[in-house]
Image (cartoon, rainbow, N blue to C red; front, side, top):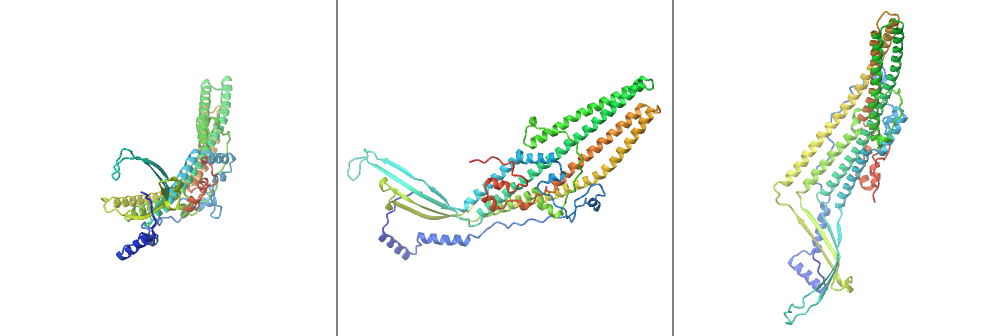
Length: 538
């Protein structure tokens, strides 16, 4: 913008006003008043579509839950509807202090959670960036220029040449404002706020996934401990059988073939027992990574547990839409896409820009900031695209298609959520029956081994019958251990499918996203801990 000195002449100004009245010309200040009135009139316009959550089909009840599951007749008990619902620290339902400690460490130091927190802070900053468009932009650009003319230039009036130095001291303050007439800024803010809420829901989904993975890996590790204990006791039993076989061989009652069979069985079981260390180490290393520690400095003590799957409060199927963070993220994505349609529609309407400047300009620094050196200018402009070869129409179509895709993704997320809940309900119901049946099989295998051992000692049957009975018993005991571990992991996965005690009411509102401190905005969605947040940068 070019700033020139303005000389105030009252008589000249009055003459110009009278001349403008006679000619019917509207003065600049009147134009500004008219423009401002038009802005106030149009300020409430919003050309974007109104958002409403699309309906989805909701089942009245979960298919895989039967009355027997509430009474525990099937071996697994569902929490009664009046029982407490899931809460943020859902892992405390398993009453395992070691698991509680690992979950706290994961919430404090897991790097995937930390990355999700940073993504939320980034999205929150974008909301503030969009909101800044509501306000004018002010710029100050002082300048000092000294200009010397050439002494060889001939003055046309005097016919002689002379040089002189001319200074230009300018201190302008410029302000520009593009009012939000058609909701472009409002929809941009709404879209960015919805995107930030998506990031907040993604953070909770990441936290839930990490917590569930910690619990699953922990119970799998405890399963290896249980199998190790089983195989250790089996090796002791097989060693005793080998000692018995050797004693019978030395007395001439049995053959060297039986001794070789007993040795083979013992050594095979010892190798299998040793092999369990590989998978246990891998689970331990996975837990180290999940808790933000190096595998070299992390260990979990060996311990066998006899924890039973807890009764898990299911709630109503309709509540699942509010309890799953991934569904909340999909729903907020729809709101974001809907607002972006409004941003695209606003491009059809004219853009009005109001600008003004004021400041001081002088040739001398001594009177630079004096009152006669003042300068000012006000004005407005309007622009409207008259031809874009279908660009705006295609842009609106693009965002409409993106919205339709987000609706389909939302409905797919709901369907997947119900599938996961039903899958794990079915798994727990069937596993509870299978565990009972497997326990009966273990008892039968134990009785068969006792009979086979007695008949071998009496010389009725060969030692091969004992080996067969021992192998059958070990296989059934291993299956029983694995089924119980599968019960525990399915319980964790059911809790994860139910949302882990989170609720969409915990999502930060647009006002909170703007008003809160960066750390507060990230922690407002946190359940048990605000950990994983990055260090604060100045």
